[in-house]
Length: 83
Image 1 (cartoon, rainbow, N blue to C red):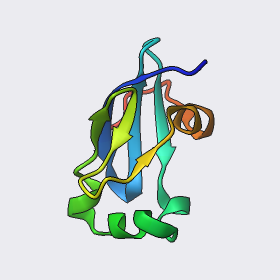
Image 2 (cartoon, rainbow, N blue to C red):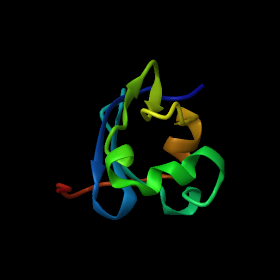
Image 3 (cartoon, rainbow, N blue to C red):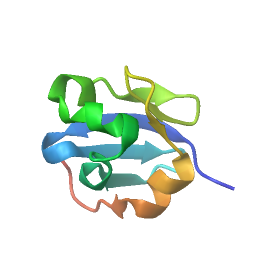
């Protein structure tokens, strides 16, 4: 079972602040993915910032998406406010 993403906020340096349905806030680093397939397009900051919640996960304007399990497992819990 996975936790659904209920909010996403693009941050600087290709980071995403994710809020999951259990209330956890976690930061996900997209940099390792930006040299792969459709994710290369997200090096364009305007495209990167187009991220939005789609169903239980996230999606960009170019139809790129990431499995919510990957987002949860590979992100880092946030104990402080993130800007």
